[in-house]
Image (tube, rainbow, N blue to C red; front, side):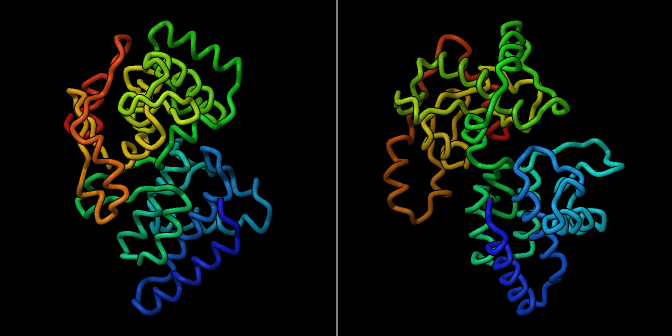
Length: 296
């Protein structure tokens, strides 16, 4: 993710700001160390600290100790001896860290570079409106992950039988890639390999996007009715709450999210009020769209 020097600079920025604001420096640095730890380990689950070289073990130990001391939420770390067995993805752990920094009113010069590096969208307001719980472009990243041919075949057979579940306990980084390959083949094929909103058909710009995010429901992770074929731009806008897709397949721009960015406004305006082109096979499940909007 980032090199050690960049994280050291973030630490110095946190220390300077904490000193000026009389903020609990140790708590903020615990968050930063947890982020450093997650940045070094890109797989879905945190290994035991013994798996790290000595230089990288310190952030792992600091992150673990911060959780045990109650400085960080339990979701920020997992996988040590005596673990309850609860598994969270790296993206969810990073997100929990960012929420702690945001709650401490960390300034943009501290939060901004980290948020950009991890591609995470934070809550738009204190009430959590437009909150995105998983890393932005999670499906894009999943499509770039390696897959196992045998696992792809097994998952495809499972989908053919109407079983769309992928249990957390069996998920590895490679499983996520295998599952996304099966999911994407079904979803993109159903949409004729065209973006449901823009009609873009160049395959390099298409992604199979989950409506109910992967992290939220094991039972529908492979369900093609929980998928949309979108261009990468539309997927990013959908994933981060800039566009809202309703259960009647109408699309509206969340103008409160756009702000003063005129170029972004110009790019999104043609999408406002449009309707998705939906396939006859496995069209988007309206219930899933309502869940995405927090309506059910």
